[in-house]
Length: 247
Length: 255
Image: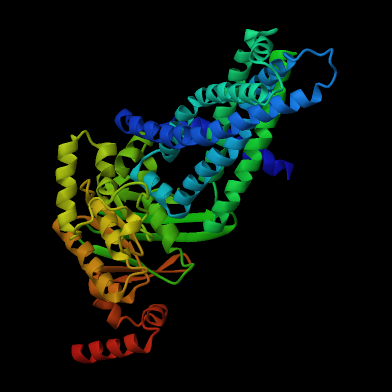
């Protein structure tokens, strides 16, 4: 079993190398990248905005309800909301959600192309199928930090509305909390993580779709396996990057 | 012309192609037949370069594929057209975009020139009112026509077809067979077709290669296949009562 995992990991890195071989003409690649931006980034905005806004609200309410000691200042609600959203919720948990949404889409679309011989058709024509299919996704995923930026903003905004209009804190206190002990490097840390997760979100599901074998049922299985592995690797990388950048 | 010299191919311990030598001439429709598991698909994929043969070689008009460098191999692929069993059309593209794909990828033609060429091949394969439809919106027969149009749009020297008639009704199958044969003659293409369809064998098999257990068991034309006394060929081709009677009538007429 260990040998199988190691062989899969090796195959993944060989795939990454092959993605850059024999690049497709720029005029074609440009259109592919724009299509992937639409499919992977623009189409994800709705769900990311929705989740971020309401989870931000929940974080603010839960923090407020746990601050029962009158000696603890109310501005802590804003502070805790900011830290939770910026450090962990937006970069990591949105990425896990995206492993389900974006990752399944990538695995199933590439997997369906494998099942219906479309990948073979590309290879027979002399097109590097990995470059044609995976490279545009990698470039599109590099815009993923913008999605996370929006998620951070909406999460905090949701927390503000829930905190202030729910009667848990005042606008002034919440904003004071947001500004309190602000460390700009935390934003850099969040975006570094996001960029790494974006790369994983584009490449791990592509790997599972590209090398899948079988029929329609296996496409479904490959999507599930891809979601599990993308999530596992994101969580592991989250730990490693936090240890490296924050400790 | 494609010359195949003593090619062997194994997967693990299993030897699928055990040394096949034959040749396919330009302007002729050559058919590869044989039972399931006889090595037809591996043979076709070896010709296409999808599988690398263990030994032996394949020559495209004297150019030996195994001796080519990466760039030469890529270049020769632009001379190849392929019609897949399931058509393998790109779902996300319209019929017009599917057909124009090889031109967009491998030529420097302008959009207008691509459109002109695409319209020409669309007319050639008799596709009507389908330019802007997606593959899922057209019938199986039309999908096959689109696949043929895509395969010939870049003026290939070599055309490979894997079971072009599978899933088609007999009438449409004959239309597709005739279309492939007409195109082969019109553009002097070297065409190799993998098939199970005995109608195709009788109708368009100018050269027939019969594979059995990874070996070339018999080769000849559709005229010769009526007269052969090779037991493996007669067992396979004339397995139905109908074809047995057809053969008997043909031989009686011939006498």
